Image 1 (cartoon, helix red, strand yellow):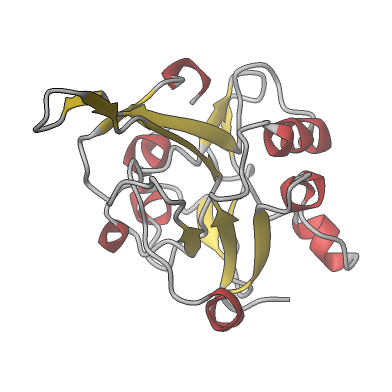
Image 2: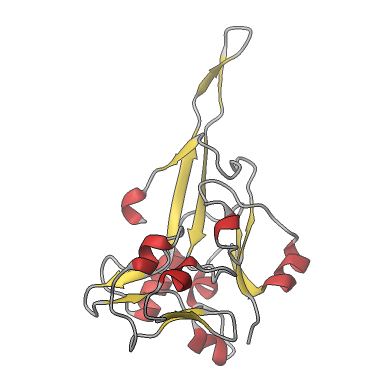
Length: 206
C-alpha cells in the first residue's frame, strides 16, 4: 500500500460541514464522544482604526479537518508502555487491542488528540487510515465523503510533488514534535503556526 501515508487538506475548499467526521463515525460505528476525525474552527480578528479615523476589520475564520497524521516520529508509539500502539510496514499507526490496557498515555502525549479512549471497550482507538478500504482499492471514508474535495490522501512524496510543500498553520502544533504526514494548503486569511491572533471556537467538539 504505502510507505509514508499522508493526508492533504485544502483549507480554501473546506467549509466546515463536518461530513468527514460523520463519515468516519458511521464507517467505524464510533460511540458518542469518540471522534477519530475532528473539524477545528479557528477564528479571530477585530475592528481596526485607520489613520484617517475610519474603521476597517481584519476578521478571519477557517476550518481544519484533522485526524491521525501517522507521524514519522509518533509520540503515541513512544509513550505506550505495552507496545500496543505501533507503526506497521505501511506507515500506518494502529492499536493492538490484545495488548492495550487503556492507560491513555498515548492520548496524553499526542499533540493532535488522535488516540481516543473508548469507554465501552476500555481501550484506546484511533484512525487506521481505513486500512480495510485501502486493501479493497477504496478511498478512506473521510476523503470519499468530502463534498468539496478538500481532503486528499496518498504517498507523502507524491502529494508533495502534486500539491507542493505547504506550511502548517495555526492552531496546529509545531510539526517538529512528531513530524506529521500532513500537508495543508493555507487559505488567504490563514494564520502562521504559533500565532496567537485567533482562537478555537468549537473546543467542545474536539
